[in-house]
Length: 317
Image (cartoon, rainbow, N blue to C red; front, side, top):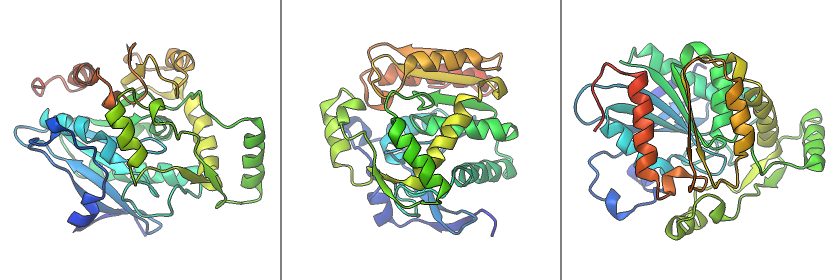
């Protein structure tokens, strides 16, 4: 079975469960996403949240990947602003996350996760959409994006790594790594493991958004040994990808991040082969820039980089 989009859209009830953190300034926004069905080659139904430009020419396409616990609903605000600026945003809920199908917090192997993203990128390429195709990833999604850009460079015109989990402060200890290797060898895929990110303050300094994160019914708080071994392989692929990444790359870091190892990420940045690479750090921000007071500055800096990638299609608002 080939990866293919189905014409059916998800129901309004499904969309209502997407966990979007509504804020006062979001109420009147003219752009809303409607998740579309995507059927992966193994039959799992995945959700892609589309944010369409309302007026004017399309500048390009952004395929977005979320973190280990999150889903597209966390990033509704920035996705909407990107669409308002002319970018066609495709935000994929990873299998087993958000409102996508598949067992919660599970993946059989790293290739399955890569294949899901590659199928979406190929579908976009087949539509001959205008402008560049940017692969954007936040937090844990950064290692998946780096792996995809490494093994399928022909599908990615630009790579935006937003506080990526390629090098993390919070990671399995030696004993946990050994147990995961044993589970991988023994093909134990379904053992459940708590994700050690239960403190909402790790993600943001904003109390209201911390409350949203604590109450979000779609957050992933437990992963399987299969997913964690997929993560282990993706981590290696991503951490060693620098010399093979040649497209324009943006790296954004939060200065007060307690999840990401910013020092290691800066060393990773130095290994990137691309002659077009940009590093921006927000010194006062906690991990999730989407939820921080610097949000407007973060988005404007992102627009500046995107304008350089797509310079001949007008300026963003």
